[in-house]
Length: 127
Image (tube, rainbow, N blue to C red):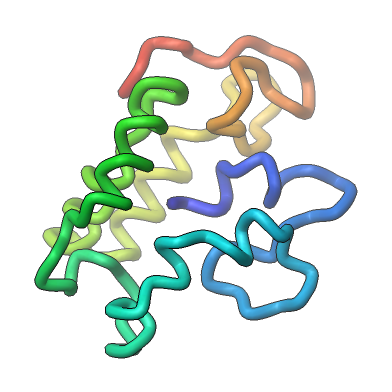
């Protein structure tokens, strides 16, 4: 997941340091994430799930389905893009896609309105 569009990362209080962070301030739900705590993922020291022989595993497919349905974002598509084009190109694409057209701040995947200026974001999924 692109942490830069997550509500936990964007909020002003109790900010999450990001999925890959090992900081103790990470929210409990994130710290207990079954994907980030996957034995196969942690054993190999991989940065991305796509290097795993089980990619996409059942846990990732379940999370991907929830995010595609609720938020119009696919983690599996993101990982496939990163694998094919690299993380820098992915971040550049995300920075263009998830910016408020009104105030220029980052949009949150978990909200239909910009959390900075309340302008509705495009709710068209995969837009």
